[in-house]
Picture 1 (cartoon, one colour):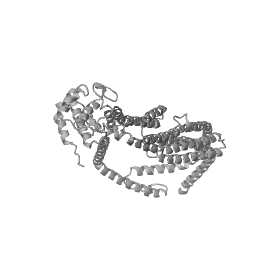
Picture 2: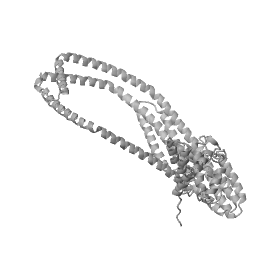
Picture 3: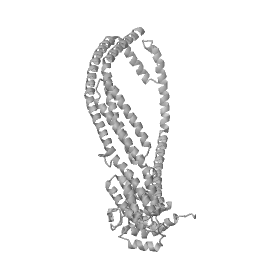
Picture 4: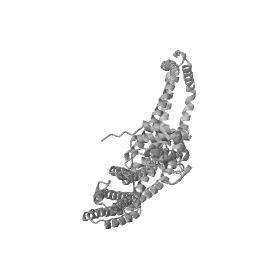
Length: 562
C-alpha cells in the first residue's frame, strides 16, 4: 500500500508539471511582449519624473543660488539621458519608430544649453554679495557710502541700492527705471571726483549685471528662459504623444495574454480534473486516514500511537505530530505566564508613550522660545525680554478670562512676536536715535515678515505665533500697522502681546532710548486706554500690577561691563 500511494502522487505531480510546462510555453511570447511594453511605459513615466526633478534642480539654483544644485542638475540630467537610451533600446526591440524620441533628445540638448547659459550668467553676476559683479557693486557702493557726507545724497544712494536689489529679486523693469532715476539724482548731488568715480564704477557693473539679466529673460517668454520653457514644452508634448502611442499596444498585448492564459488554463484544468477523478477512488481511503490522523493530533494533549493507522509512512508523521503536541503544550503554558504579566507591560508601554509625547511638546516649546530669542538678539535685546513678555502675556490672558489652554499657547507663542526682525538690516535695526520715515517703513515690515515665516505651519503653536507677530503693533483705535485693523478685528493674542511688549520696551534700556520711570509708563497706559490698547487689557494690567512687577524683578536684564 505504501508503494501504491506514492506512485499515484508521483504520477499526478508529473502530469501537473507537464501541464505547467505547456502553460509556460504558451504564455512566454505574450509575457515577453507585455513585459517590454510595460517597461517602455514605466520608462516613459520615469522620463516625466526625471524632467520634473530637473526642473526642481533648476528652480532651486535660481532661488537659492548655490553651486551644489548645478551638480544635482548634471547628475539628474545623466539619469534623464540614461532613461532616453533605455527607451531607444526598448523601441528597437519592439520594432517601433523613434521620431518623437529624436525631438526629445534635441529639446533636452537645448534645455541643458539654456540652463548652462543661465547658470554661467548667474555665476558671472555673483551668487552672493561678495562675488562677481554683485561683489563689485557692493564694494563700490560701500566705498561711496563712506565718502558721502550729505544726508540727501545718502538717501539717494540707499534708494538706488534698494531699486537695484528689487530689480534683480523681483525681475520687474519698473525697478530698473527707478534705479536709473536715483542714479541721475545722486550723480547731480556728488561733487568730488573720487565720489563720481566710484558711482561710475558702480553703474558700469550694474549695467553689466542688467545685460546678463536681460539675456536670461525677465519672464518665460524672453531670452534663455524662453528657450528652456519651449524645450520643456516640446519634451512633455512628445512624451505625452509617445504614451498615447504605446497604450493601444499594451491593451492589445494584455488581451492576447488573457485569451492565451484562459485557453491554456482551461485545457490544463480539464486534464488535471480527469486525472484526479481517475485517482480519487484509490486515494479516498488514504486521505481519510490523513484527516483522522491530523484531527487527533490537533486536539490531543498526549502522544499518538502510529500503530492505529494502516500506512507505514504515518510512523514518521506521528513523530512530528508528537513533537507538535509537546510544543503546543509548552506554548500554552508560556502564553498563560505572558497573560499574567500583560497588564503590567501594557501600563509600562503607555507610560513610555506618554513620556515621549511630553518630551516632544517640551522640545517644540523650547525651539519656539529660542527662535524668539534669536529675533530679539538681532536688535541687541537680551533673552530676558522674551521671557518677561511671555510671562506678562500669560498673566493678562489668565485675568482676561481666556481658557488655560489658550493662556499656555499665548505664553509659548508670544516670544516669537519680533521674529521678523531677522529680516531687517543691522544698520537700521540697531540705529541709535530715531528712525526717519523711510527707515521706519522698513522696520515696520518685520510684522509681515514674521507672519510670512510662520503662517504655513499646521501646528497650533506656530499659527498663534504668526498671529502675534502680525498683529502686536495694531492699535485698538485702528491707527496701528501693518493693516490698520481695530477693536475685535485684532486677535486677542495680538491685543494682549501689544501691551506686554510696550510695557517691557518702555521699562528697558534700548539703543535709541533710556528706560522710562514706572509712573510715566502708567500715565501713558491710562491715556492710551481705548486708543492704543484694549480697555479691558489695560484694566487687567492695573488690577494685577503686583504680578507684573514681580516678573520684572525676577527676570531683570544683567549687563556685563566691557
